[in-house]
Amino acid sequence: MEIKELQKIIQENGVVGAGGAGFPTYAKLDERANTILMNCAECEPLLKLHRQLLEKHAYEIMKTFQLVADTVGASESIIGIKKSYIQTVNALNQHIEEFPNMRIHLLEEVYPMGDEVVLIYEATGRVVRPGGLPIEQGVAVFNVETIYNVYRALENQPVTDKYVSVVAEVSNPVTVRVPIGCTLDEVVAQAGSVTIKDPVYFVGGPMMGRIGSGSEPVTKTTNAILVLPKDHTIVTKKQRTSSIDLKRAASICCQCNTCTDLCPRNNLGHPIDPALFMRAASNQDYRDLNPYLDANFCSSCGVCEMYSCPQSLAPRSLLADMKAGLRKAGVRPPQGVQASPVPSAREYRKVPEERLMARLALTRYDKEAPMDESLVPVSKVKVLLSQHIGAPAQAIVKPGDQVTRGQIIAAPANGLSVAIHATIDGKVTEVTDRHIIIAKK
Ligand code: SF4
Ligand code: SF4
Image 1 (tube, protein in one colour):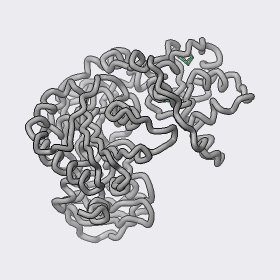
Image 2 (cartoon, helix red, strand yellow):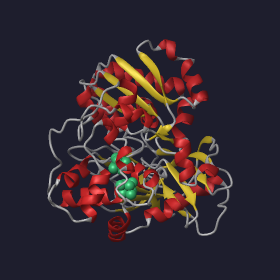
Image 3 (cartoon, rainbow, N blue to C red):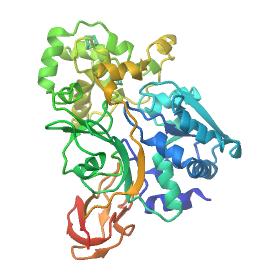
Image 4 (cartoon, rainbow, N blue to C red):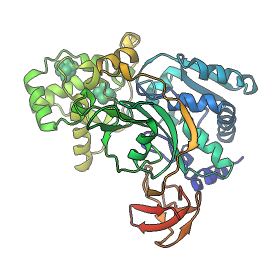
C-alpha cells in the first residue's frame, strides 16, 4: 500500500495515539523511518491495558504492524515489551516466525520505560536529541492500541470506542471497552462498587495522570481511572500550589542532587538538571539562564518529585510552570542542542517499578484488571472535537440530526487533524465549537 493511501484511511477513521497527547497517527507514517517500534511497556504502574489487548489480538496487531513497516519501507519492526508480561510474550511467540523482520525486545521493569525517548534507546541504542523527534533517528513509535485501531480502520471501523482500566479502590478492577464520550462515572460503575467514601478519580497513570471529575467524558486518550482516597499521597501531591512549592524549595532543598542523578532524560545525556534548576529558581538567581531554558527538555515523567526527592519537593511541577511561562512569553526552546554521551552510571540509576509502587503506596492496588471486550451500553455521549494534538475537527452535523455509530460527525480541519465519529446511534442534541452531544433514540 502507498503511504498516502494508508494515511488517508487512518485520518478518516480518526486514529490518534491512544494515550499521551493523542498525536494523529497518519502524521507518523514517514518514509524516513527505517525502524518502527511498538510500545508495550505500559509506561506507568498499575496500567494493564496494552499487554491484555496484545495478548488477545496478537496476530491482528502483528499483521498490521508489519503492514505499517512495509508501507513506510522500514527494514525492522520491534515490539518493546516488559519481560514480566509472560502470557503476552507467549502469544507473540506463536506468530513471530511469520514476520521475519520483526523482533521482540524484552524490557526491564523500570519506570519510565514507555517514554518514547527511553524506549528507543533501550530497544535500538539510538539517542533522540534534546527537543528532537524520533524520526530524526529513523524511528517511529506506536502504542499497542493505536496499531489495533489502525487494524480496525483497515476493516472500515473508525475509532468509536476506548479501552479503559479501572483500578485501586473498587471491588472488581477491570478493563472495559466503552463508547468515547461516556462519563468517567459510567466507566467506574463497571468495576463493581467503590470501596471508600469521597473517592477521587485519577485519570491516566499515577505518575503523569491528573485529577478528573465523574461527569467528564472519555476521550481517545483515556487509558485508566485510578479510584483513590482523597488523602492518598498521589492526590495530595497533585493538589499543591507552585508558590508554596517554591517557598519549600528555598527553605529545605538540601542540594543532594538525587533528582538529577535519577532523572531519566539527564541519564540519556540531555541537559535537563532539576537540582540546578531548583537552586536557581528558589534563590531567584538569574546569572545563568540555562537551568531555566533547559526546562524545555523535561519530559514531565515525575521521577524527581514522586520518587527521588528525600524532601518531597516538586521539581517536575516547577519545571512545568517554567516551561509554560517561557512558552507564554514567546521564548523558543534552545535549538540544535545535542545530547552528551550516555553516562555509564545510567544502568545503576534506573527506577525499579516495584520500589516506585511501594514509595507511592500503590503496591496493594497492583491486581489483575481482566479485560471485558463487550461494549458498555450508554444512553448519551459528549464527544469532544479536540481529542488530539493539532486543529480540532469541524462539526458537520446539527441538532436534530439522526446519526449512526461510526458515522463522521466532524471532519478533519486544515493542518494536523483527524475526523471524529458518532460513538452511539442517536439524535444530535447539542453542537458547540468544543463538543457534540448525542442522545440515544
Ligand atoms: S520530571 Fe524530573 S525526572 Fe522527569 S525528566 Fe523532568 S526533571 Fe527529569
Ligand atoms: S532531590 Fe530534592 S532536596 Fe535533593 S536537590 Fe533535588 S529538589 Fe533538592
